[in-house]
Image (cartoon, rainbow, N blue to C red; front, top):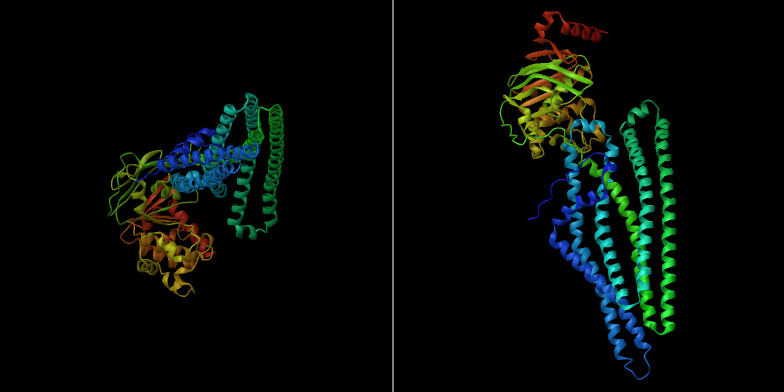
Length: 600
């Protein structure tokens, strides 16, 4: 049974710090996972090149046979050589195609495995990473990198190795059969050609890298603009967005023109080197024929070898350019695998057992970075099956509590415990399987209503999906739609209203059936009528579950078992709704202010 190689561990986040050899080495485990296929493909490669190099030798024999004096075996010899010539031609093609058939699985499996590892690694990275990176640039890096992995493997196995083998075989034949001048001319040509190609290509790679950076930025800007389509329309900023995008594309145009011009310089230099070598080789061969030390067949052989060398050499230059470009694309994607996971399972992490859960924030302090402290010594407990609400002004740190409970970040001091266990001692998968959430801004997948509800528990049956929709008072709305549960919701759910999206989120959370529920300002973006309807459904969903309600509107938390008032990251008041009003403090002021706003 073949096992996928371990995930690539790469140092440093910056692509420019990554060496090409490290990129190549990181690909080797994916090839060696299919050792017998690789070995057989290499054997086919050698067989194909032996046959290919033998073709000019057979052709020389045919030419020499036809130049024999009359009376010698003019017919038998050429027929045998002609047959050998045909067999060798076919053998070269046969072994080449057989090699590609054998190696195709290796290439595509490597691409698939690496793409999956990058995808899984991105999901394993912290929320901080994704908030700081633009999705458009990220997807473009992955797309180019994945495509280039297949190209790099194909170039190396199908072209570079065969070319090197053929060059070595031709040089060997020239050394054995002819004077040293032929070998020297060929060897010097190879060295000069390769040195020139590498020097110019390194220059072109820097230009290509710059173009890639600009391309990723332009792509990020375009996707960001399209994702905010309505905002662009609200402010009539289509021309502004077009100018910003075109400013990036102008830089990209300049970089790509430089790339094309540098390619012409490279091609002209390579053509000049090959032309000089061809002229020198043919001159030496013609002298040999004139002096009687070489036959007509020899000059044909040298010419055939020149053509045979010229084509791989020219191909090698193209390949080197493509490989460097592929490495440039791959290094950006591999740099993602070099990103450290901020939140990891402990080596001895254990599963959180199913059942009722008591959640405790035990003197928790947290900061997104040293200059931005958010929570200070937050201490409270949500008993199993009870509801605790957290209220406060915007920026007081309320939503951070939900992110910490999901362990998107680790706390700097204190601990968050479930049934007495620090969540850092639990596996992230079992922790998150225990928690359901209805967020303030429900973002849906661009798929069907059924898919988005079923996302809460992908293994759920259609009957369970319908039951969850009924519980969220969504089934009636779905039934009147022409496509019912197969109705597509659009990008980020834009085809649904705010209330409809929230009901989908409630149905999704109910289908997951978690012992812990979080309502993160789940009704703050809704109108009063919709809010009241959704609020009743939320309270019904919370029955019997450990529930954390994060709210801005105090009217939505009146029935909570305990209400915490958060101000500047600290709990300043706590108690029931009635007790807090009697206290006459911050909660009372907030209540009075919201009452005035509703009246006005």
